Amino acid sequence: MRKAKGKGEGRTSKGFGSTACREQVDLDALRLKITNHLGDKSMEMVKTATEECVKAGNLSALKYLFGVIELYPLSPTAAAEESDQ
Image (cartoon, rainbow, N blue to C red):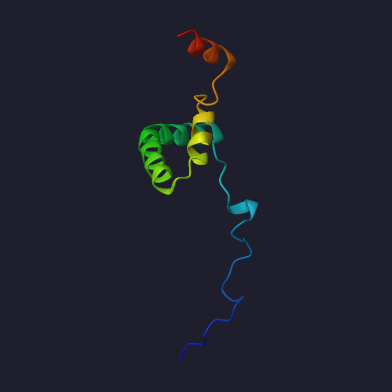
């Protein structure tokens, strides 16, 4: 008959978060991968967010999104061009 292992038995001294078990990560390459992935999915995410915001009536999320891409609020030069038309 085998004896059941207790909580601390059979474990190594290296924990999950220890620096000894971590590999060096190329952060520039990781940022590039994330940027490319988000770029590929961005229009799909915008369409989904837009539909959900309109359904729920929560337009503050769209206002934020438009602010991020500098579509809203209008810059002073864009506002002047709008008023000239």
